[in-house]
Length: 174
Image (tube, rainbow, N blue to C red; front, side):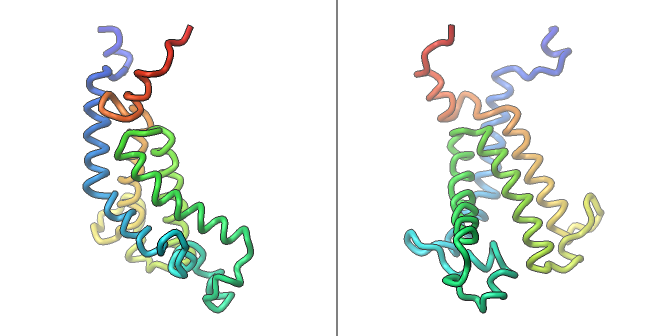
């Protein structure tokens, strides 16, 4: 009774919540992120599209030639593409769930800033935070994404996850 009063979530409820949130993520957002990654890689090589998506103004400045981008730019694009490919899969599997969820929140913030400031998405699409317009997608939609991911960062992978499976084989702490 005392745990309920303090706001603690029972392990069973936390596991069910985690599984449900990961399922919602898998059905709604995983295809979005994997489709985006598919445009950014060809085999194990980054495509020009990866550079344009992540460094749009930089690409314009170098006449859309990735070979002219300095090594920090290449590293930034490679790490961004790797994060977009790996973090969503980790979340669905429930592997390093909390870290993957926090990484995805950071990724979505960077993606949103890039879309708004560097791709020049029109204000009508960006919208205002918590406005009543259902067609202004970026701020409200991505706030919902981050809320889902933040909940996963709090509850973790739950019992039906690779985190739990790995935890069963760890030695008990003293």
